[in-house]
Length: 206
Image (cartoon, one colour):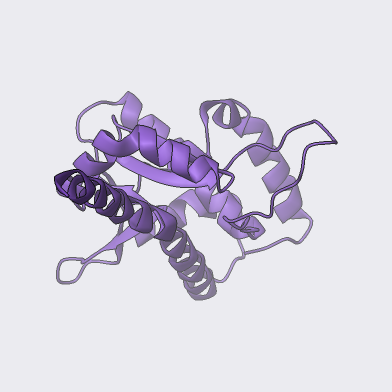
């Protein structure tokens, strides 16, 4: 009887970790107890989600974890599993903003000091402004960038903070962005931005 109770408790512990993971990202700062449970059970979590065609991404240094679809095999004979985690196509402006934020995060990390990169809406607008024609309507530009920022908040790469009185909106760049825009991608950043500028010059405006 005691052995059965232990098995049930272990299953419950695993469920308590798996359910939040299947819903989204787990952050150490948001729930230290859940994070520790994930660290303790990560081998079992990896085995379980592998059955679903998923893999666990866990970055202990940065303090985040999430599930993603496993790389598909090149073997044509291998069965193709349906994707449990859907791909999310991103618009050009959102991709551009993510690229700029990732570069800003790399520069911030290189400078040392604080681990949290916080930017105001105006600072983010300034990042984008250099890629736009000088004649861009300022009010319209800000409105459109705010729409794209809300999308990035929804994706989990930014966290909107409560601004002080009289401040513009403030955003924390979530470090999970590093997992989606990796070092190799960043190494090609200048070439990618040149392509972005060419696309914008052809009329692909925000």
